[in-house]
Image 1 (cartoon, rainbow, N blue to C red):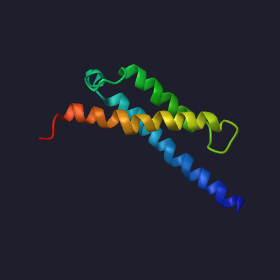
Image 2: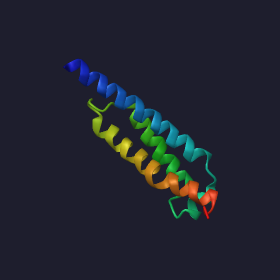
Image 3: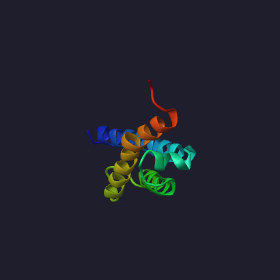
Image 4: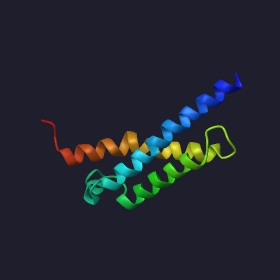
Length: 97
């Protein structure tokens, strides 16, 4: 059964690391004024948060010694993906009706 745990940790690490890189590059490609229009923190702040989160996801693993850093990076990336990214898309796209 130890093999299954290792595979699950590897898959989690891979998927969330890719998500972290996506969040960083998405934050990088957005307009500066979109962050203030969406009433979120500034672009440099979110670049630092998503960049640090992506780095933590890449450097540490979910079941290792630095798993607390991995978890903090995961939470940072998930906050961006669930809260900030949809608001930025909505602000830049405009109203739907």
